[in-house]
Image 1 (cartoon, rainbow, N blue to C red):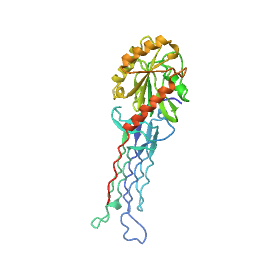
Image 2 (image 1 turned 60 degrees about the vertical axis):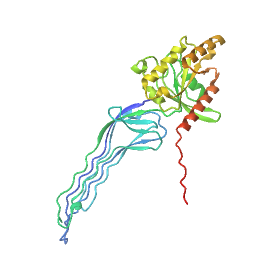
Image 3 (image 1 turned 120 degrees about the horizontal axis):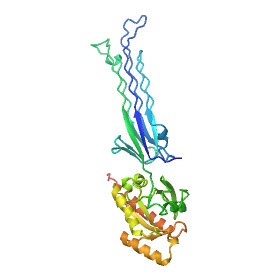
Image 4 (image 1 turned 90 degrees about the vertical axis):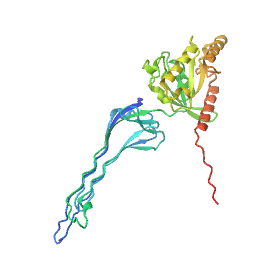
Length: 344
């Protein structure tokens, strides 16, 4: 299945049906009176979060969603049929944006959550509705309410607990493959990861989700490389795992490159909890490891962890550190329970 995290859709609700002007005319009925029914309500357009989806690929092949109009009212006090609603089924983590791609209309983060995108028009009143003691034969009716037409953008931000960051070939996909059942593409050239991957990782009987995004390079916020468009997928993460290639000759510079891109992206992404790990230590001897670790710790200003995804060295320790950060984040965002009110 191809991955698509941005889609443009055109929606239109149904217009309401017009009211009917009709009079009851039957044999032996001297005083029939008005009997025109109301028009039906037009169909609405909804967005609903469903389970089992992790991409917006369906909206590449269908972009237009038009609900049915309500039917006009009829004689004999018959109301027109309502138009059927249309439901856009989207994955968890979908944001709905206005046409300017900046105004957020809705943020759908739970399965089963629904949001009304365009309400169907109300049906018009038939002449039966206008009957009164002073106007017993009204010849007026109302037209149905017009449809609502909108152009919207759907943007997917994956729901994950941990987001992987690093330069291309820092070992992010290797780490994900070594710790989960995910099978991302792994090769010895840059940008082997072209779209985000999700993996479920378990440690000490606890599972959490890790998101691997394409590597960043200097100037990604200006569109270089693949750009920073995939950074939105780690905005919701509780903690970021920053992998630095231990075999690089510029360890500190590589670290600052990623931090600079996070700060340029904005959105408080650079302020998130972050664990920095020196990766690929299986390719270093003791002296090279000590030198690279000291250089990276000086750049970070705090202790860093060491790991090798291929050799599984230090992987459990990194996973336990991630689990601890996730637990702390959940405690920070846990709603405060109000004390029960006292009743005599």
